[in-house]
Image 1 (cartoon, helix red, strand yellow):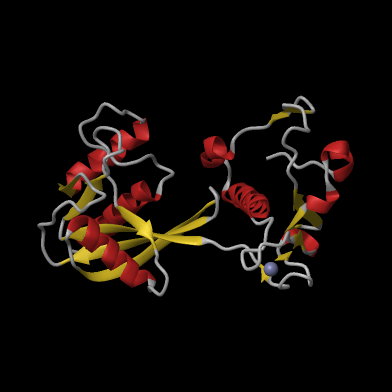
Image 2: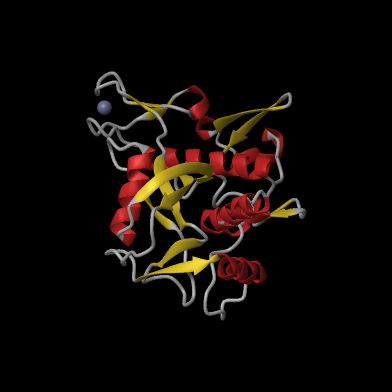
Length: 259
Ligand SMILES: [Zn+2]
């Protein structure tokens, strides 16, 4: 990431639309939309790129800043009108709130996130992965879906796994999470344990299949090399589907070495 000062941005900067992101050391960071204004290249040292294509190359701090900026700017674009009464809203100071005017209903609107849960199903020395019809050939992954209104995270994970694979989980363990600013999703990754094998493909899944430890190691190696011709593989290293399999294998190895 390259950070520009307000003076450097000049006419490309609309101060009214800048969104406050926070402090980085002593510096205040703002995000602003310069689409259409700024030249393709920035002072010859940087280039404007689609975040989705470069997110995996950024550090954790940089990708956090970029995700926050992208999500907030996108939220402002999609929230120009009050969802309660339809009046035009205005951004509050700092840009972390939008307000409906007093002549409307006066509601304050805050950025929301959609919560997704992705669950890896395991039983003994095997994991169950599924294929969605849109997946490229050979690609298998854990089961993911939105958390619905009124659901706990655990209930959503159990429901999604049941719907997509017919498996009932006996236990669930939180692993990690990943924000995804397209536009504003937070995905929580869990590892679930099933009592036994079996399973059947649900309505959004074309096939479910159990994979043993060594097969899973092989699928991770294939994902690392980016080989898309292998018969079985998991998604790329930056995805939660990949990282869940990696985490499960680490825990499996730790259990095995303890005997
Ligand atoms: Zn309103």
